[in-house]
Amino acid sequence: MAPKHTPDSAAPDARNREAAELLLEELEGNGLEVCKVPGLEGGYVRVPVSVNCGWYRRLCCQWKKSRRRYPKARTIIKRVHTVAALRRIIAGNFSGVYAQRLQPFIEEGEREIKEVA
Image (cartoon, rainbow, N blue to C red):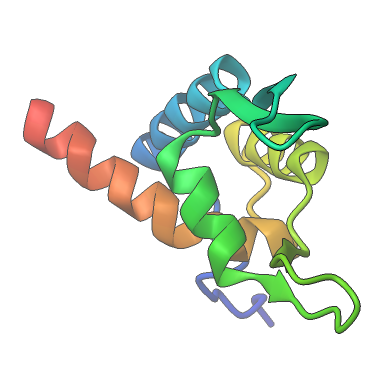
């Protein structure tokens, strides 16, 4: 009996891999960096020098975790796990939770690749 062929177990095609490579390059090329500057009321204030790429910010916003004691939104997404998942996708392994979470962004990258071609 042949194994059931589902989208989750399907090997990504060349466009999936190419889109994943572009996402990985963009993620590794950009990152959140802040510096402290003197504040108006004394003390220091953190100011962003550079920010994460747009698709990664949208991914983090989709997967928030709630903490009652901390007023700012936090995310369950970890950059290290995202990079590892993109590398696995490029290698042909499209399994895992992060791969599923990255799927809409890979499809978005595929559309951009089609428009350029």
